[in-house]
Image (cartoon, rainbow, N blue to C red; front, side, top):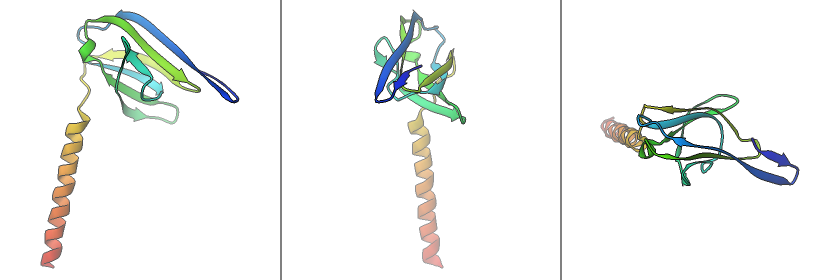
Length: 121
């Protein structure tokens, strides 16, 4: 999607104006993009990587705040960025903070438990 000449790198954008479906909770697409490369109505969408392959990542962005609104969905690419299979989904983006907090609590619990066992033996 981008042009990369030796010593120069150009940004290329592709966008479309339309209405985000009312039931849309997330935007899912395949590609290789940077953190600030996707926006709706000028607001950068926060991206989460759902999975990856040798050629691309699968990204998801929370678009629930824009459900039913009309605006421009814009993808901006640099160099060798790629974008494909853009779709809206009615599945909400999971909160990474809740999962991370639970994982951290589990690690602390197991660490503390391990320390108490080492004092006994």
